[in-house]
Length: 62
Image (tube, rainbow, N blue to C red; front, side, top):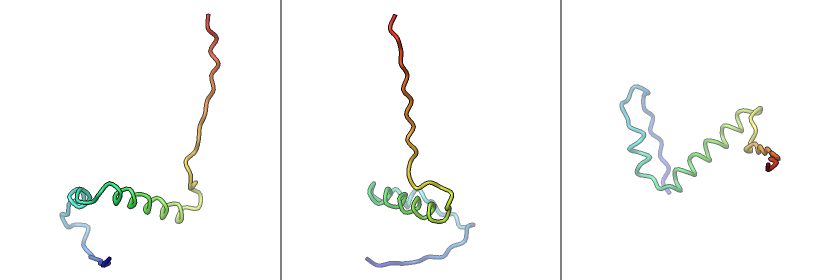
């Protein structure tokens, strides 16, 4: 795999949608997971797992 880096300006009129539409589902999912793990490493207050919420309701039948 060849790694490359391209530095551009924020003013450049690039289209991220075109780039990501060329990637497979697995590549897009891996990119999201990479961003998620970087976010949790930078923010120590953030939880690294999803919170599970469960509510049990007892309904009496009439």
